[in-house]
Image (cartoon, rainbow, N blue to C red; front, side, top):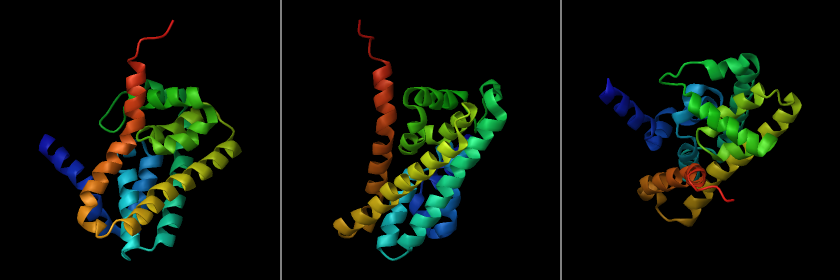
Length: 209
């Protein structure tokens, strides 16, 4: 069972193969699932989008359709997350942990929301795991629906533009980037983890008197 899980994770994180196999439809589904469904917290949204942007530059995808479809998927995903939080409410914090749901992730998103307020919906887009649970926390907090929509659309568009557009621009700057795609993916994963690592480091620092 353990080996099967490892093999599945390796397949999920082989974003180049995912894009080649599933194209725009699979990209959109993964973005939707990562932002709207709790089990999607482990999906490789950042690296997937950057790689898709690179593919768009090489002509294997349309950059216009990539930006449009991914933005819609990201916005709809957050809408679903908000609805789940609004309807399930605080019962989510009582739910038992499972393979695809961890209360610690919800708590982390809650702390993020407590710190940044409504801006969380924009900022969380750039923080793995937090972006999956932040919409639900906004729903639990009964954030104004129309305010949520505004932040959701802004955050979704900025995230997609930064990741996919960044990959597209990067492919234009680095010759034969396709031969170095795995290095790019590793760099994106590392950079996307930096905010979480920084927060972890800050939490371990002694409080100042």
